[in-house]
Image 1 (cartoon, helix red, strand yellow):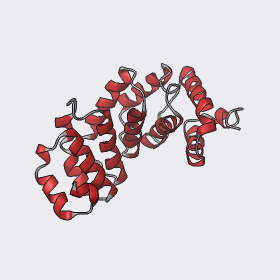
Image 2 (cartoon, helix red, strand yellow):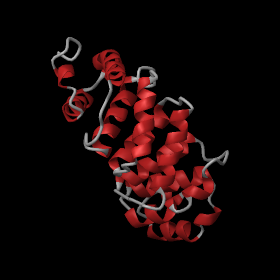
Image 3 (cartoon, helix red, strand yellow):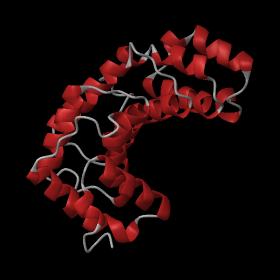
Image 4 (cartoon, one colour):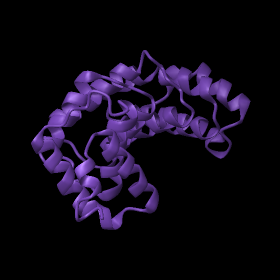
Length: 205
């Protein structure tokens, strides 16, 4: 509770780190979120060590994982021991045709943290080809495009014709509802992904 009021509370940070093994999944996510907002990078990294222990627990739902990744990317807390585990969880969710805000936020966080897992990229591409992106809301479409371009900087992201068609369909629906910031990010994504034809297509123009 003290951390949620003030993420910079050094005493509360020390207490949480000391007893991190006792935290539930939701408690861990909330503590990490507070410390992430406060820029307490070392505390976030230490708390993230507990993520593998909690994965799959009832009190560590997808929303908690998304909050955890959001906290890590806020202060660039790259825990190289934990990122592969989180990538694997996202891979499984994509294989199960998951969708929604939590998945998009998790991919956004992994992208910002530079989690360049070839297997995760392959699953995202397969998921896009199976209409996964079209079912998302405009903000989440932008977050997935962000993952492709920030996580991989457009490198080795080769889209086939069906994946391009699905991105086009998703963008056509999302475009009227995007804020200027999301639109500019999408235009950068098109360029990095070599989707120049989207830049001059009817919906984007």
